[in-house]
Amino acid sequence: MSAHTITLQLPAPLYERYKQRAKQRQRSVEAELLNVVTTAAPEEDQLPESLAGAVAELETFDDDGLWRAARHSFPSEASSRLEALHFKRQDEGLSTTEQETASQLVEEYERTMLVRAHAAKLLKERGHDVSGLVVRR
Image 1 (tube, one colour):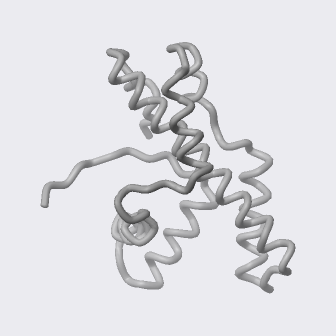
Image 2 (image 1 turned 90 degrees about the vertical axis):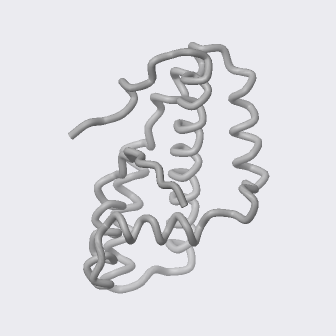
């Protein structure tokens, strides 16, 4: 099986969550994230209808629209809220409403990342240099 290296920017709360899970399971963060991706990948690359629609819509965007989509980030307010819910879940648990909110925020984050990645892919296919979209630390 061949392997590909990718660079992925994660919000701090999400990174910390997977770092903690990796530590508990005595493996690297990379191994933990690979496990999550492998487990979460839909069969036969089928996306849920809402995500498939968002990705399909990008095909109609001009280059400027794709650049905007590729640079769009998960709102900091939403990231902060998700982080707060994550810590509350660890400390005392979440109410049903809070669990629903956390799920919605995770879905929003996943949608943002999927749209960004697909927009970058389309830009690259159109001959653009997308290396500036990759955050290097």
